[in-house]
Image 1 (cartoon, one colour):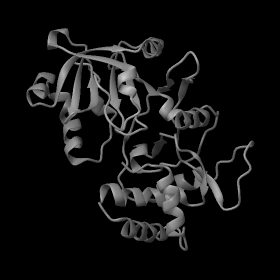
Image 2 (cartoon, helix red, strand yellow; image 1 turned 60 degrees about the horizontal axis):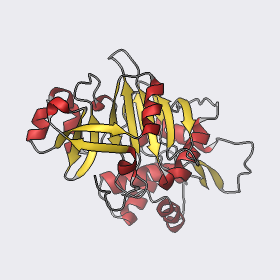
Image 3 (cartoon, rainbow, N blue to C red; image 1 turned 45 degrees about the horizontal axis):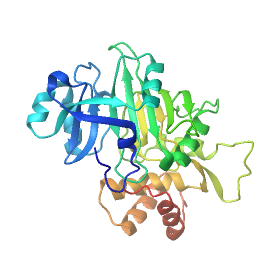
Image 4 (cartoon, helix red, strand yellow; image 1 turned 180 degrees about the vertical axis):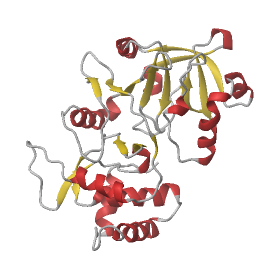
Length: 305
């Protein structure tokens, strides 16, 4: 298939996709218009809806009922097609290392940093193994996450994904690959709570012995937002640490509410900033980051899609 414009090109590198009839297919390709969103094993018992949290009403409804909608019906509705899919040998080798039987795939945002995530599974009783796949376009981000997840740390207010192994791209490897144990949970509501504030405080207090933290800076997740957190009861898992690093104290907390205001509530940037500060003041009086300073850091991460 041809490369989509403004993407990392990873779909073309990682997969060979051949449209076919249902009886010859290995997977069903679920699309949004001409863009692939999810690739689902038609015979699989474990479906993507068990692990995908979405804040889109339309997509959320689809994920809720995906277990009950036959793939042929999705095809008839023009929402995708059956395909025979061949993995790149490096990815096929990583998949075999998981010991699982089949896989689903989540296709990341269509931009120049696009990545893929495989959900590898066996039967209903098995925990899945996730494989995050990136190429040279996302080498910096994936290296940052691999290094963070590879540190044997535990945290009081949250957990992080459990890294099984990391394979870095080099002269003999085209892809950066992260194999992680499945993390489960429900989506976090897009509001600020005492729990979220406490998680932010613990993240910002992380110290690394090999880093001298400049005055006014603290450790930062970088993309701290509801869609990168899952909750199980009183337990939280914070994931997608690709943007982690040191930033202005308070950046993550302001990013959390600012992103919600921009992406989910449709506010313009001035109102989103002002409203986010007002929300944070309910928990931390006097909290402040100058608007221009925050937006400069926010834009430098190129997180808006």
